[in-house]
Length: 241
Image (tube, rainbow, N blue to C red; front, side):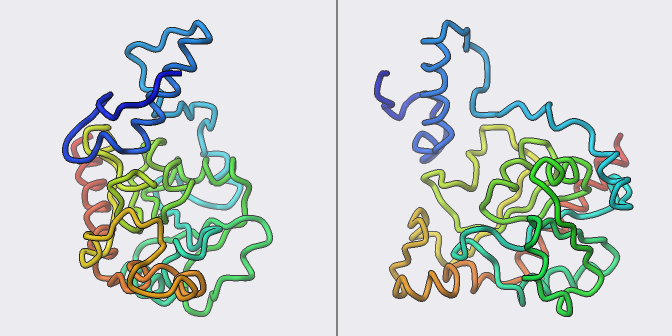
């Protein structure tokens, strides 16, 4: 397979280094070797049509499609997580919104529900979570698989994450057409983005045990602003429709 040279699908600034461009290159050549025509396709944009409608999943949990905010409180990588106290402040700024925490089966016990009054917690499989994300008014998550899924499904998405120009994994290059995706990163740490959370500002033990410095010090106000903008954009779209 020919080596990726970095010019294929390149966009502005450092887009040519983005992981999605690498995936595009390799997937295209794999398809060609299998005799599958790939010209004009978007191999970096997965087809999630198999997820299907989530109306039945909403009915199962007593939710109204389009009337709740799906939220991922934590990931499998502690360094990627946003502090629970920051989440509490963020969600507390939206008393009129129904937040639904999506967690893996058996993981709900790890949530401090006393700090999150009014938040509904649902333990569900990945496929079930995907259907609930599809029907959500908004998805709020981390640098994780669920945020990628939400973006591809077309659900308005706010992702709280370290900034990276290398593509591991957010933000996506602007020219990839994901207008539904908003990322929130700490503006004071843009100079060291792409560190893969091996922080030069503190010992690795601090990052592993406490989470990434640029995430645990990210002001909730920035996340709140992004959520407000996403909700307002969704409301404006509904009015136009």
